Image (cartoon, rainbow, N blue to C red; front, side, top):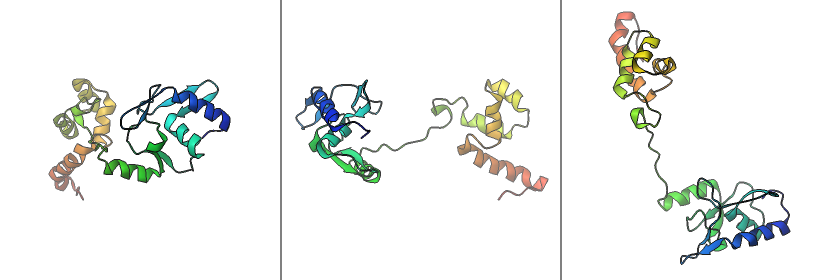
Length: 181
């Protein structure tokens, strides 16, 4: 853990203990500040930000070896009870998460389902097949011309443009001497 003297680490840790609350499950929950993922953190003027569960491990067991993480048996991110912590590689930590059913499959969102989406799938297909100037289409759909360009170049909306490209090339290819592979 960053170059902080052992005596100072112990003082910070015992100060942190005052902010902990024991649960029936044996967790020692951090009631201070947490990061966006829910891990307890401690900030002091004279030290960098410390994660409370990592601080606990270092005070109880010494430095955390390079390449290892401090993992939670209880799966409670703001728990810093030493008996609930163990060391593991990132791979072991992920396997533990999956085994306990805490992994949430990431389902990509496209089109209007995406929070930045401006165009429906049908509109994207129509843009790809439309032969008008990109600026004209952009003005009509009230989007930036770069959006139209990205669709036509296959840089965006790739979940749709590949199938549309195949249809487009099959339809026009033989007449223009183009073969889609």
